[in-house]
Image: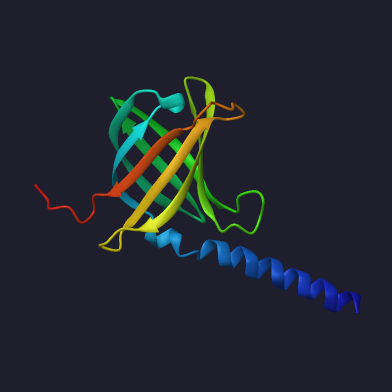
Length: 143
């Protein structure tokens, strides 16, 4: 009985790891994006560009706004409380301050990924978070 239980746990663990690696977002989300955003607390609006890559079962975001590029590590997570679906959550350091961005992933009319995100300084409860929207540039005409 104990051997069967241990085997079941090992198989379930392997299946869970495999499911994360094969999540559909790993092939759907990567691409190049136009970024439109607003600083937390209703601050200044900004625009930029980004590239998202899949790396293993995770993501890497490189976002450039006003000449400054940041690199963020992204993971597919279940928000709290659980049972509300999945989000793509990025974390990075900017000017020595930890930041976290939570994104909903959807499809645009051309079936490319579109991300709607809120971000904040980690642990800081601003009156309103920063906002970012990511629009795929992969279908745009080439110059």
